[in-house]
Image (cartoon, rainbow, N blue to C red; front, side):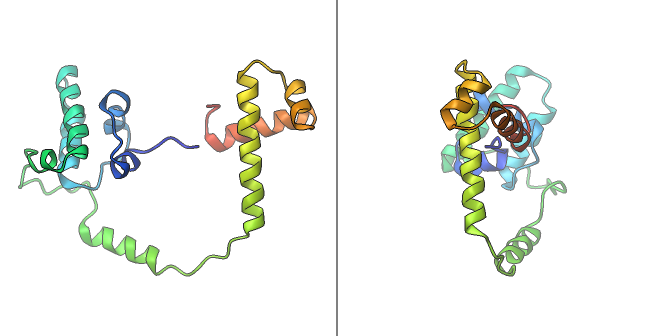
Length: 160
């Protein structure tokens, strides 16, 4: 499963400063203007202590609407880096009005099953089993186990 982006964490309101602060720099700017300005301040702040405080403020603002409203926002910030409301609405309109796409449910189910099996294989490998032992567990060859683990690595981007 791919790692969560900052936008995902903001949407789910699950951003934790201690775990996700690095995303304030590494990921793209968030959609909310107030949070985006806070994120920009975090990016340019040289002090580690101030950055920690800004990350905590970001976390609190997500969890509490009053904290978000109390953020010190610069009304003159034209915010050229973020999409405008019109751009976001146009993107939403394109998604909503996109033509339907035919989905092969059998193929999707098989791909999901294959992925799930590869994750279980990886977990057994992490538990100390070799490819031959894992293959015996799934009634496949060691070569198939290795191929499935390589495919999983490619799909995840890293061997997570």
